[in-house]
Amino acid sequence: MSGEFHDSVVKALGDDALRQHLRRAMDSLIEKRLAVFPDQDALQALRRYGMAIRGNALSKLPQLLERFEARCEENGVHVHWAETTDEANKIVFEILQSNDVKRLVKGKSMVSEEMGLNHFLEDKGIECLESDLGEFIIQLAGETPSHIVMPALHKSKQEIAELFHEKFPDIPYSDDVDELTAVARGILREKFMQADAGISGVNFLIAETGTLCLVENEGNGRMSTTVPRLHIAVTGIEKVVEKLADVPPLLSLLTRSATGQPITTYFNMIKGPRQPGEKDGPQEVHLVLLDNGRSRIFADEELQATLRCIRCGACINHCPIYTRLGGHAYGTVYPGPIGSILEPQKEGLERLGELAEASTLCGACGEVCPVRIPIPKLLNRLRWEGVRQDGTGETSGQGRRRKHSESLAWKGWSSLASRPVLYRIAVKSACRFRRLLPQQLGPWTHVRKAPEIAEKPLRELVEVQGFTDE
Image (cartoon, rainbow, N blue to C red; front, side, top):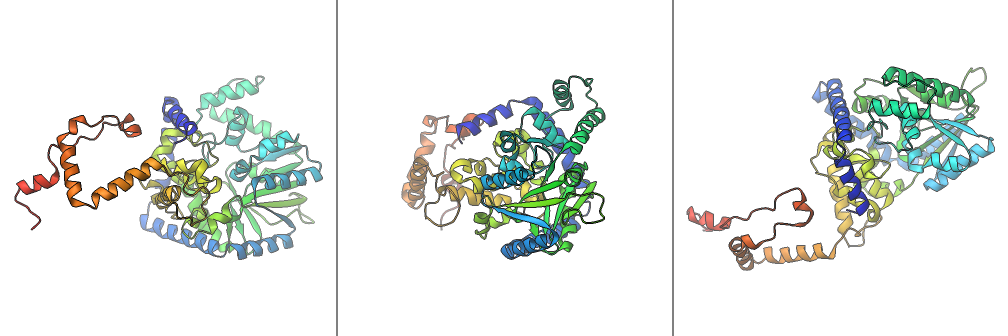
């Protein structure tokens, strides 16, 4: 592990309040998910269906994206392609600049977090206000999301109350959740009316109709995409599905896996700008499709399964590592199990390959993923990519996690284990001199006792019982 990641982990593990917040939240989300999936056979059938829908879309990804772009253009939506986050930010800024935008409101979008869009626009002199309550809270706190669905999950209501009182001293202090929500709503409603543009993410792109689907609970997404005169949506290229009929099963899996809801309060379907005779909606709609390493992931038949993700957060909610660390310890946009396979592929194993190793491989993430992404298998694959040196594959940073000392150790073990006589001598020596062996074995013994070697090897114990090779 790098020093930075190690320090973040140690800090998170020492924060008892954080662990209590996370434990309560995760337990609640796990219980809600169980309650909305009472029939396990039906759940497994729906998961297989969801996997098939996403797999079908990925198998036709280039063709579906072209079809989607054509339908969007027919609907009056301007489509832009960005290979990198820098290019995506530049496209968004040019659109805003050409429309003389000085203030904008923004719905929840993990891709915009991936782009670092808020900071980029603020540096350009454009006011960018988060309208999702959780995102609004962490924006006030100067933080990044701790969870892909519930960004302020790590904060207690008392912490939020103190933050609001600090930022808005004219408003009386209160730690009542309803009052805090009302305060935020009052501030945001005024900003919606003042904004020149709205930015949102996208949950599903429908190739058949050229429709953008946006799933939310607060209505801020609908306000961001209808009140301002300009709407810009940003999303990854993997979000496309083939048909409108593909959306209901995925929506059912998404909402129930994420928050235990049969359906969210709002489901927005956006096909284009305001048409003649319509009373609301933007005058102009733009869509930025971001690659940022997704094409490289798509090119690998096994790792391609990463792109099936529908961003429900179920793997995070059930992960024993995340529950003890929270999202900020990972130091990445996407935390938890999905982040541990996605981020190293996007950013390179040389930078983030350690995330694939920060896992117990307990399998909980794979068991709950609504589209059956084999996350434990992909974690193992990335671990292998980090040490392999055969020159094949597309994963950036391949072989950078390989250590010369580990390589020598495994070669020594291989040589010993393949020579029976030497192996027996080594085992007997280890048993005889077991008292002399070191008790500190690196990171393994920081939180564990060193393994105790038996007085006699297993072979001798078996022979005493009368068993032989013959």
